[in-house]
Length: 251
Length: 270
Image (cartoon, rainbow over all chains, first blue to last red; front, top):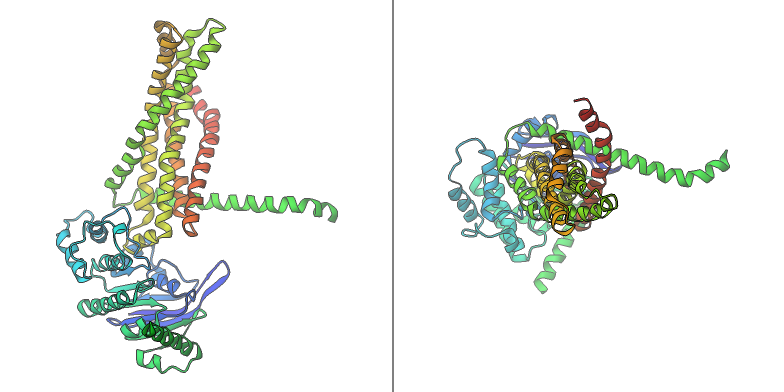
């Protein structure tokens, strides 16, 4: 379980998070939504320890992330897999090397497992079997994200963090990535935290939705509860999502 | 008093801000180098990354170093030969070029060529990795980016710049030999005799120690600039330019102090 308790964070005097409180249950998909620039990614980076809160605590499985030293934090991060907004694949390495990278690093100094078999298996889970010799520059945006996901799950983490997984993708690829998030959760029974501003996508995959607005969580609940919210900022967001979907239908 | 303040403050305020900025950057750079030194001695030791960087910094710089060294030695022999001819001292060309190359020109030019060829690429590569979140990705995969990216580059430059300096010295002397003997018609015997007589091991060693220090500094500066890149493609360009300019200026300034203080002290107290 991930508990975010009263997290505050400022950058150059600009307060981005103003006391976030959120509990993310095990084995479920929690989607954190909100408009661009509201601090969603900053919040995600606190969960994996890339940022330390100015005030408040992030507790993962009973461990306060901020209390860990750099080496302990490094080891602790093996529980996580993270898919970045633009996949963050290493340009100079092939798809195989990218996906195998976390395995090679975690088995350093020990007998390596069968890399080829594991990498091919993870690539087949994301629907990309047989592309391991390609370079990231040869892949489309959606394929890059799926390779990023294969890399994120290669160590079979307990928690996967998705940073805007559907941003910049066409509607078909968006649904494909949503299905992938659902199937990862069903097949591997992992805790998923998805950051998104795509309300339709969020409602499709979420067990729990939380909305960040002006540095605070203003609403949380299941997809159904979220749809019925009376909070004006949530309603505005939902209506914008409905408009976007209907414009898509007209097109 | 107020009138004086009104006159000087438009000059002193930006100057003070600039000094504060430089002091802040220097502090952050020292902290960065300290972290790199701390991670250098912690396992896992990535010899594969180290070897890759040695190849990139050293082996791939061989031709450009040999080319510039040859023509540096050649032009130096040409100019000094003409001056020495006024005093019938052409035989001193070899010794002059040898001393200049081993003590000063070899380490300084080798470091500047490595800055231009390899360190600029390091800054651009790390900068691109930063803005495309590849460095963050490393962290999330439980890999310390300073240990993985910076330490091999620092070590590679510290080891390879002295080796490239040796090459620079050798090829530079060959260039001066060819110009001196075949173009200026200096007798080979006195040319080589003076070279052996005046250039000794201390000159070569002092140059190599300098080269190692330069190698460390240029890698530390370039990695720092790349690692702390902000603001997309423009930021990468800015970081690369700053890496090259600051490294080159640092080499020249450090060279002066190393020559006047440290190495002269070592040589004189042997």
